[in-house]
Amino acid sequence: MYMWRDIKNPTAGGAGRTTHELCKRWAQKGHKVTVFTSAFPRGKEKEVIDGYEIVRKGSLLTHYFYAYVYYKRYFKGQYDVVIDQINTIPYFSPLYVRDANIVVFIHQLCREIWFYESRFPISLFGYLMEPLYLRLYKKYPTITVSESTRKDLSDLGFSNVIISYNSAVASLYKPTEKKEKYPTILFVGRLKKAKRPDHLIKAVHLIKKDIPNIKLWIVGEGDFKGALVKLTKKYHLEDNVVFWGLVSTERKSELMQKAHCICVTSVREGWGLIVTEANAMGTPAIVYNVPGLRDSVKEGINGLITPKNTPQSLAITLTNFFRDENLMNKLSLNARRDALNYSWDKSANVCLRFIGEVCEKQ
Image 1: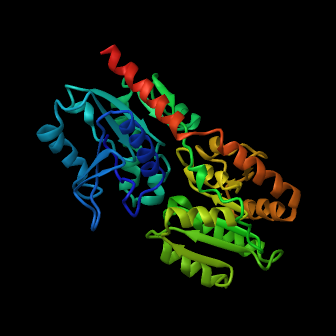
Image 2: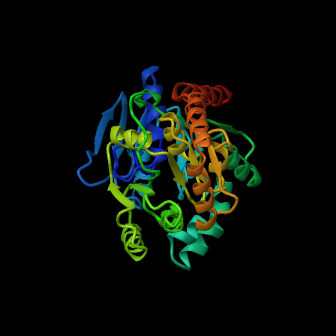
Image 3: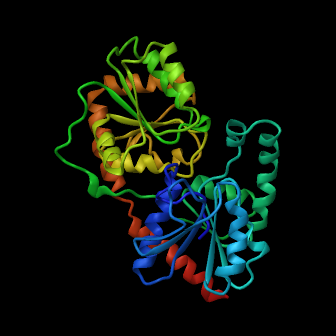
């Protein structure tokens, strides 16, 4: 499988976790699984994790070239299937893979994310090119993680698309862990403009007028952090906002369980793995109405969806949430129940059956 950031990469997100959970289960079933990905400081060039091999070569940009080189030199003829996982830029495997089946794995389209994360004219170029280079893959069997992305792909001409839902490690839940004394919001993710964590800080600024002891925990790192710290100081929220930086999986689960809700304000997501992870800890999600998040959050069951994707609308939704203890308790209980409907074992099997059918047809 080609993918951009593996599970050990400090900047890995939901795609890295999903890839790890699927690959280790495929390896447990006796399959030879190799993940080719980008390198990172102090990361080994090759290692085996939970039964599957990881090969790292090149930067986030150059590893796409090395993917081609390594396939020609080392991988050709060794595998039945090449999974081309697309995160922003594809590996263009149909142009050089001739001896194996190709399966596409795509979490989400970028679309407007280009304008948040790239400068003009690169942003416009990427936005216009994305539908064109994705059409190269439309005849290939495809795995995605939500109905929103499946619809986006269908609009581009993809016809053979299945959904493999994200899940969570529910065993990390600790029944004895209590919620924080003060109303606490959690944000988890890379601190990037497209994730819009600044909307949360602005919302907390508005909420503080009615709920002075409101807390916002921000977990993650990224190039947008400096601007977020400045915004926090501008609104005099130093006592309300805590930047945790990068934390372990165990610590993240602990914070998820202690917080009253997790907020996701991204421009779009594939699914929003952190929603399901927080739900598994008994914590509901309050999210924007965007692709992916409108799939992972069922309004009034495992969370709430804001009427508008603005800090003002988010502030109103959060204030109403914190003022209604019955609603908070109901969503917390239902969130954990909903998360238990998803299983990495089930998702791995769904993908494996699909890949098996692809191989049988060739």
